[in-house]
Length: 141
Image (cartoon, rainbow, N blue to C red; front, top):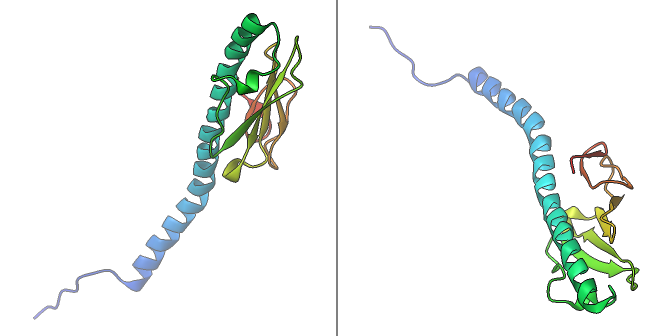
């Protein structure tokens, strides 16, 4: 009588675990960068939406001073805090500063619409003319 074995051998299971480990080693960093880029869009949306609001505030008040107290100023989120600096009658700088998992990222926009990345974690880079949204200092906006 012939005996039929069922199941997997230890070697087969170890090979499968090794393959899954190699795939995870490649996929996890890529996924982490993808999630970070998704969180960055939160700051870009808030800053981009605040610029027309600031212009509306200026047309009503003839100054940018006090815009940070206006109802349409971006609200702080778990990922970014927003601050108005250098506000005068003719100019302003709006800053989004990363908090928590986004710590280190600092993006600005001014009255002329100039985008700048003034701070970022290691490997991301900075730029005086765009918002860096990819490692290595690449911008897509």
